[in-house]
Image 1 (cartoon, rainbow, N blue to C red):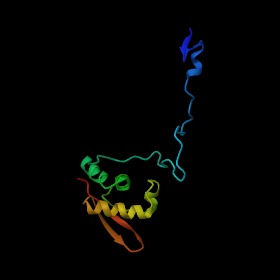
Image 2: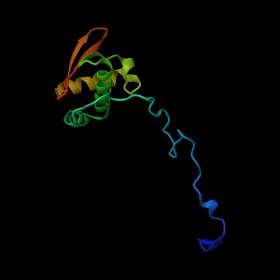
Image 3: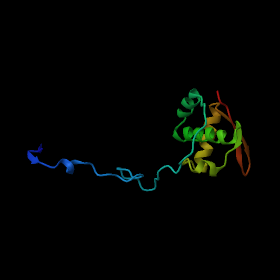
Image 4: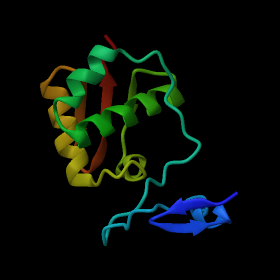
Length: 129
């Protein structure tokens, strides 16, 4: 069977197949200095209050990501109150300065309570609804 493409007769349509892209590769180029998410095989234990997430999303992407990380840590610790180190949020793409700003924004909006200790990681209490 022949096909007509751009005015040319083509008898073998196999050349029309899209190239296979190896797993983990993107068709889009990556921006220099950016990397894909290093988070693999991690889950967030629910239930998660959707109202909480919507409020956090209005505070910006980093605040939302920090909030999701807090829910993840809550599931691991099985407690609403826990220490949040810079290392814990690094895999979420949140550096120390962004962590500080995100926690401040989440606290100001009443989603969390933060106890800060000089030269130590803060203790966070997650208000879940």
